[in-house]
Image (cartoon, rainbow, N blue to C red; front, side, top):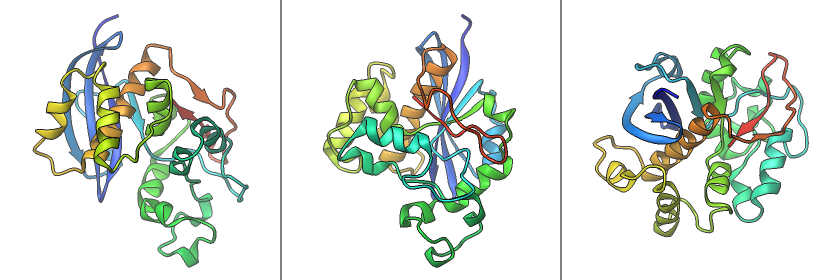
Length: 228
């Protein structure tokens, strides 16, 4: 297998933090950091990633369901307490234009904070594009990377260390890359992007897991699934 580029993406304030990874069969050759101002810019990254794994919901329900999408419910069952709380249900599509909680009944404050990013991705996504751009959840990726759910909160020093140690078997220089980065991105967002990149490599190598195995599609024919 020839070396190829993949990307792990995590939303950061008004930007998108990108870890571009050149790899061959899971062996990391080179990594690069980028900040993209828009999802369109992500889609036009150079070199072009064969797989873009993004920590943002893709595929949305048209009406509320208890526990959200099937993939969200499966992810929570996998992670269990306390990490299950990191999987929050995305809004139904008609609430995407909302600016306040009162305009989108039932959504969490966490969802409201990233609503503009969910809307931005949803506007661009097509079933064809979903063959290259996939939804991931970092805590689900870490579960399969470490063989168990992370024990500590990712925003705490213990949680940061736990996740960096899990990733260091694949990204040998990750401690240096994260702490010496000149981009002013919170460490937990950078680490989540690396977890997404780890899953992107697994997808290209044909060994990734998908929740659920047979995902339903939404009104735009987008699959509602989470990869790991």
